[in-house]
Image (tube, rainbow, N blue to C red; front, side, top):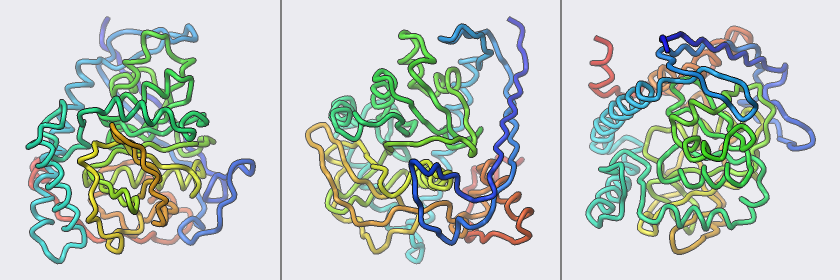
Length: 365
């Protein structure tokens, strides 16, 4: 079929209050950074190379992404991001004054160990990824047996490979799956539901291509209650619930935006699935930042650990922690910040500038 052009207009109107809080679900305290009113936000998503039509479970035909082109672009962007993060980590780990240098020491140790002991699966090497560990499906099965999972109607799951089985079990169990756009590069979150899919499409819907094909994009206006969050990790401390991701900070931003929407609160369980060898005991809680997300439950191939974490959970978007460079990566946050400032006549705080790796600079040529 001839190539077409698909243009999606997502309108995210905001209420006068900064947090959309259905009374039957939430009762948040007033917090300083959530006192700024919001207003309409418009986001255009443009994609080309639409190749064919897809018939959904409801019988409607929708244009979908050219799968090969989408996957090629995703792999290219992921490779560029990993290269950028590798160079950034080298700079930060050598800088003894950088407050995040210690994180890279732990991450590298875990990544190196997983490669050395061959406890990782494709894609490899695991460096600068959420590692796809041996036994990920077993850990996912243990997760699915938890009451928190069984009782959840809507589960937010990260898009990484080791949590693919969790996404499958969520959809196959008739639950609503909320998953972020990879690196939030094209939008926000997508929602998938069992009723939207044919039985043969469920496995594909658990992949990034499947999310693009079958998912329903949502905006910040969406009145959604998330009952459980599943998050990927590079390392996690079972005694404290302290967690390290791969270093890009998107899990923290996703959590902050859901909190900002009123979709979650302090009581929303956070679970991670990892290999037993990813359990560490040297994450210094006192060095964690206010936006770092702790976990309540850890599922490994051999055990389930309830951390009883006392680490405070982030309360929303911390604008003073976002560097101009990070804002430059995420259009939805950039536009939101600009419109809030325009509406209020006040400048939101901005975090310190980050050192851009050479790959980011070369991309501008």
